[in-house]
Amino acid sequence: MKFRATICLPLCLTLSAWSQLTFTVPVVDKSDSGSPLEISGTASFTEEVVGNSVTSSSEYEVMARNMSGKGVVLLVAYFDEAGPHGGSTHHILEFDHFFRRDIGPGESFVLDRNRPGRRSSWCCINLLEGSDEPKAEVHVQFAQFGDGSTFGDEAVAKDILATRSMIVENLRRLEKATDDKEFLQLLSQRVKPDAADGFFEAVRYTQRNEGTATTRAEVRASLAFAEKHAAAIRSEQSK
Image (spheres, helix red, strand yellow):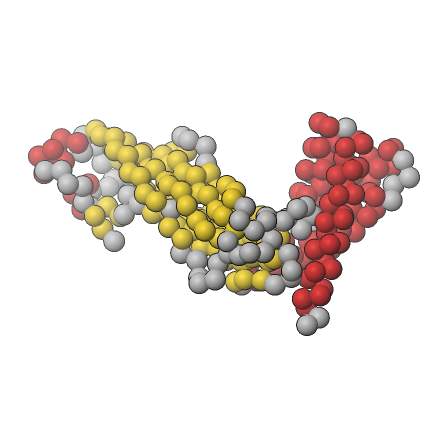
């Protein structure tokens, strides 16, 4: 959809030399019927026009609330945002709570937000041709619930689902470490694939900042949550 600013033509010609305008739009939920989330938030796009070039920055916060009545274990959503003169960005948002407490019924959380000041530039636009309507749209693609049921297309989460068994295997190795020395030696080893090692990089961060005792307790808790969620999923799949 095209739109034009309600400014008279002489002023438009003056502004085309230099102007700065900010557009704020609500975040729109474009998910299929049955999505577990209630979406809210706004996105603001600030454009600085110099001659026929434009520099744009955006600022947004997208909030979500779990309206499913069930705990959410895994969530994959897309967030698309774009200003009036381009700069469209496609965000893939992934929340895997398989190794921790799920997102409870009625719980609100930040789905996505950015740091102010992200800037993009384009050249050679014609301001008199109008512009696109700014957009901020969320599409919930997949959700896995605490009882093992799902919403949406599981294929978009296949990489996350594929790494879980490898993470569980390595958590069990860490849990069985006989002492802190063995635990730290095992923790330092890289894990394949890289997506699984990303999980353990967060565990290594905890160890560096909070110590080994806290990290070993975190490993035990992560494994307990994984076993709980895995049991629920197996129960659902066996029906």
